[in-house]
Image (cartoon, helix red, strand yellow):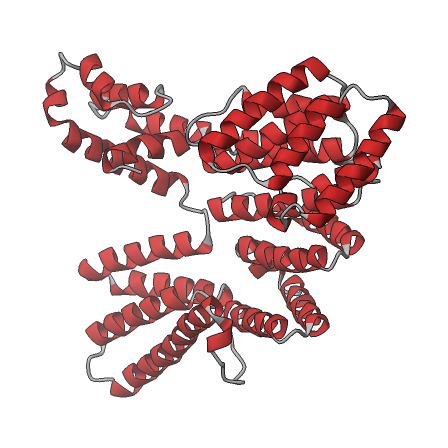
Amino acid sequence: MKKNEELFHLIQSLTKSEKRYFKITSQGNDDTEYLSLFDAIESQKEYDEAKIKEQFKDKAFITQLTTIKNYLKQRILQSLRNYHSKISKNAELTDILRNIEILYYKGQYTICNSELKRAEKKAENFQQDILLFQIQDWKRKVYQAQYPQDFETLRSIIKNQKNTLESTNEYIDLLLANIDPAQFSLSHKKSISLQNRTLKTLHKYRKQLLAEHPEKAKQTIEDLIKEWDQNPELLKEYFAMYFSINNNLLGFLVFKKQYKEAYVRILLLKQKAPAITTISASLIKEKLRLYNIELEIHRSLKDLHTTHEVIDEIQSFIESHKTLVPSNYWLSFRFQFANIYFLKNDIRKALYWINDILNNQNKKDRQDLIMYTYWLNLLVHYELGNGFTLRYLTDNMKKQLKKQKNIDFYEKTLLKFLSKTCEYTSNEKRIAFTDLKKQLEETPVPEVILGYIDFKEWIHKNC
């Protein structure tokens, strides 16, 4: 993202209700020019500063566009802070800390103490150690301002600060350990906070996987999920973390081909999700990760009959949160939709998604997914018996491949097969597929390619 595009991306990320709140709270503040600039930037699909300058060339503020854009950005951020003041316990505590600081400088120590008690209880209940340390520091400052000679109480407050700091330092060590589990060993001292215990358990889980103890690893992560389930308030506050832990287990189950157990766990996790009203970018990321795992199950269990429902659900979810979903994520999902429908012999639906990708592609798209969409398009037209179209498409594919690299053996073999055998009889095709299978057993399709399109499975099915 370029520096001059920051405001554009911020405005594009706003929800309808956030935009409405910003405009309502900005009315009557002599900000009509800023709101006009807001509307102009909001209407653009890609940021074009030259068009903005042309549109407002008669306005005095355009000579200081960078300054005005920065002012508008700060106004939007202030609006978002107010709108989302209850977005999390962290946000609530941060607001209380701001109140405490103002009250402290005004010498309102009695009200300060009242706010500090409220904040300290909330921070302890929701294990907000970093903010708890700041709260305790203000507690010390306020008490010291009132009773500068009461060293015993001040010592007690500072000791509590030290304990909180130790928990925070442990949290930092655990974050580092989880980046590279093989290089870190952790103490067996029991962590106080659930977040710290989670990081420690995830470190243990990853080390068990590295040591090739999969059943122990599975039990470790299952026990961690049970502990979270026993703490419903923390689960709700840190649902993205809980979601991530579950996704780790689901990824493990799919890797081990334990699809039915994974499928049941997905349904249970989806039942919990509607209770979470605060939708964050991190939670959306975990939900997309879950959908990826679910689609992998549908790809592997071809007898599942709810594929269309899941795809509709994913479409609806991405449409609802499109400002937070990168375009290549949507491309990846559409490619999976096409692939899964192809594997399930629903050729018409596969072709729908293939056309949706190819007719709406742009230069920023992942070119590997675009290329394998073209391959999938060839297979679909082969299944439809479109011989004339297929010959045209295979010629185009050869040209595209030659522009990018040398054509691999499997690519030459498949292209020749597709263009030559499309109009064979059923029996002739079966013989041709058997011959193709032998050729590609001698010089196999690389496994990384099969991760995109399972040519091997398609050939086997037609032999």
